[in-house]
Length: 91
Image 1: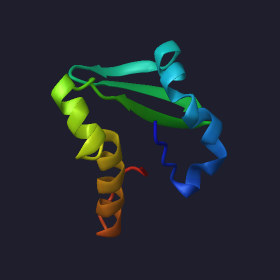
Image 2: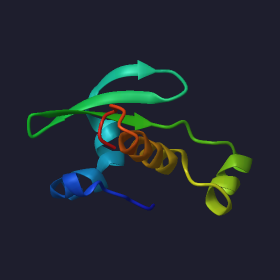
Image 3: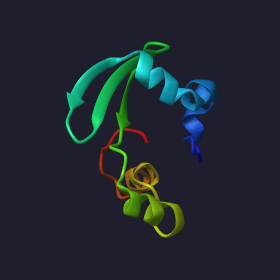
Image 4: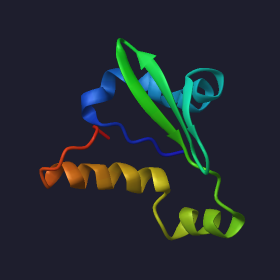
């Protein structure tokens, strides 16, 4: 799994690396549907973590070889939105 961390949050590298395990064990669910959103508190910072629905077999192949993952595109689009001067949470 490829992990990209905003340089602003490098001090949370260990936490971020363990998000799959932490997500299953803790946090407060704020949305359940196609995806799951949870809030988790770390160092007095409330963060929202999104767990994407697992894609079907064909889409898994496409995401592996052709297209960037949903998570990577979400991160990159958030950076693009910020660069245009719009307000959005830090990626």
